[in-house]
Length: 307
Image (cartoon, one colour):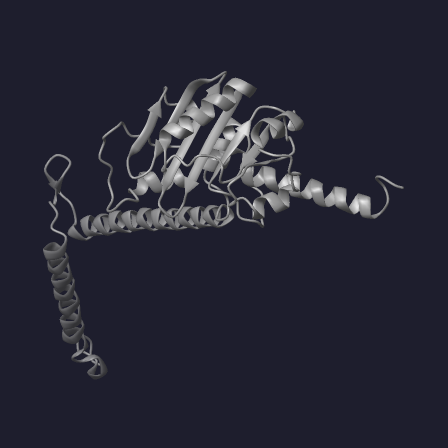
């Protein structure tokens, strides 16, 4: 090959290489221009010097990636927190929301309990039966009393934890005659000391509670489409249970004679108030029925009594 002469095999290579470099350069410029339109940044940094646009766009993309990672971590934590809350709800699904106020879960009662009853602080069953029951009729067992509670008489339970329950249609209904109920409760209280009255009609949302000592009303409230009785200061237990009492003549929310959400809530929580004041009638009745069944089994087995 003659010196200074280009190899025929290499002819045309240099121009093509230069053209390829120019093409790559123009493509980079187009990419940078596109990034400028999407992510406009100022090229001047630190003392007015210009920074390479590629570096600036790299920083912008890095910031976006970091922001996306933060958002992703937040979503992960939110998902875990919601899953934890769902687990807690499932664990507490069957728990009474008022359990911290009323204690452990209440026992279920197979027989229906009357919608009004007395709780008397006394264990003298014979005296209570003599005072409350008219006539020498023998008192039935508590299981039979629950079945016959609609009869116009009263039934006295065995004592439990120093208290005695009294049920029966002979106990005045506050919706029928509130004055008769007042006279009845004050009379019984003068005879035995401390008496409590409770009523809860879940159909009409009528409800009432009263506490008397030595014939004096400590606290009483009765509602039956209107406030019938509101005497004494609202007790701490009423406030803790969220019970709402209305003044005389106060209009309540809700259509018809059944009141609104407050009246329904009051009716549903009367037994909870009874539990805090004295005895939960359902739980107490379940315990009494269990004791009666145990006593019956013992007699049948010959452990008690004999010829």
